[in-house]
Structure formats: C-alpha cells, structure tokens
Image (tube, rainbow, N blue to C red; front, top):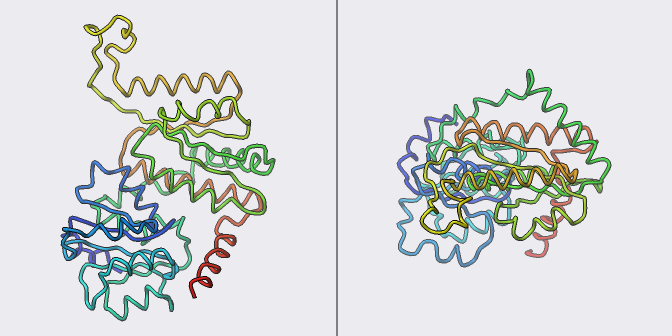
Length: 348
C-alpha cells in the first residue's frame, strides 16, 4: 500500500485498535510513550473483556470511529471474537482497516467480502518483531506520530560503539541464560509513559527466549510504588533476579514547600517530585551495589520518536542475538501454538 492511501483516514479523531500480543503491544507502547504528542483518542481492545465490549459504544457514533483490526495470521481467536462482537461489519464500511497476511484466513476473506481497506502483513516477520512494519507504522501514522523520526535510529546499534555495546551485553545475557542461575528479569520502571513499552518488551523476551527449559521471566514493576510492596522480596528473597532500571532525565520546575508546615519536613523543602524519585532510584542502586545484586540502567533523555525507535531496535536486536548465542530460535513459539490448536478444537 501507499502511505498516501491512508490520507482519507486522518480525519478520524477516535481510533480503536483490535489485536493481541505483538499485533497491538507496539502501538500501545507508541501511544503511552508519546501521549503528549498524540491529539486523538486511542482505545485498545487487547483482551476478551465482555463488559468493556458491551458498554463501550453507548452514546458513541460508530461512524466517527476508525477501527484497525490487526492479526498477522488473520485467524487469532481473540481478535476475531472482539471484532465480531463489536457488530460493526457492513458492506463498504469506510472506517475499517484490516491488517493481516494475504492468505486464505478469516480476516483477509472478510476484507474481500465486505470491501474493507486492506493492508498486507508480510509473512516474513512475526508479530512481536513487527513494530516497524505495517502493524506498527500504520497505527503510528494515523495517530499523528512522525514515522520518519521513529525510524531514524534503526541502524544505530549496528556500527561503532553502539555495536560493541550490543555485542558485549548480548554475550553476558546469553551466558547468564545458559547458566540458569538467574530466572527473572525485573523491569523497575520510574517512567509511567514507558509502561506499555515494557509490556511489549515482556512479550518479546518471554516468547523469543522461553524455550527448551531456558528463559527469563520478565516482570514489569512500577516504582517507587513497588518499593513498598515487592522491594523486600527483591532485596532479601531468592537471588535469581536481574534488574533493569528505567528512569527519565526530566526538568520539572514545580517544587514542594514545607518551610511553613513543619521543620521535620525540611528534607523535602524545595524538592521536585522528580528529584524525590531520582533519590529513591540512587538509593536503590547503592543497595544493589552493596549487596552485589546484578542490574543494568537505562536513562531516557527525552520522550520522543527517536528515543522510542532506538529502544525498540535495541531490544529486538539484543533478544535475537541472545537467542542465537543460546542455540534458541527467537522467532518461533511452538508451545503457544499448541494452546491455540486446543482452543479451536474445544470451540468446534
């Protein structure tokens, strides 16, 4: 398809994306990370939620909503179920886009029968790696995201110092994976806008490396909130965890004033909420260092397309390389396919 073909869909101010796993997590990551730049209302149907489906369209004009239905195989049960339950299928609808493989699958057949706008999902790329393909770029463009900037840093980790960084990190992680000493990757997230990206990353790592009795369990942990619920376990529980720390270099001017309230609160006077979070992060790192707890830190400089494109690229490349070094096929998901087959048999 030509990007110009999407021009007629730019008028929609409300977009609903229907998909599962890699077909939708990338778009959710884009929406969360760049929400200050996105001027449209974006909704995601990424699970079977009966009440959400039944109640969503009350007092809403369906004709003013753009629907993106995304499934690589075109046969994903949850995606089809949500799509059908929305009761929006009618001949020649001008507010429905289908993205799937161009094969004899349910979504492709529906798009032909009802004459919906159709975009082919290339069969050479799996859902969890598809953020820079049709599955990610079409939603990004319609959200108003600068796609050129998003793709700007795609080759940065294939040359120079960045290439060496990728190589060294991949070797370390592959070695840890093979030794099976560390089973859990805990994503300590100090950036609310990054949460959806980390859920995308969770799927990427779990499905790509969780094979042959090997794998890391990626867990998204929002901090500093989880300092007061999970930190005791993290620091004093089983030593089977590697921690990834994500923080944002952000300039916030609004400060807390405590001078007229209590002298006991002096340590908070003239502090910003960002300064408090950074202090908590630094304190945690000190404890990690003191107790020889393995971690790596990612400091985000800006919430923009270039940064997010670089993050997508880095984690995709690292995951693939680690899989290859550990003699795993990072592209397959055989165990998941078994569940899909049994589900269809039970519904037949």
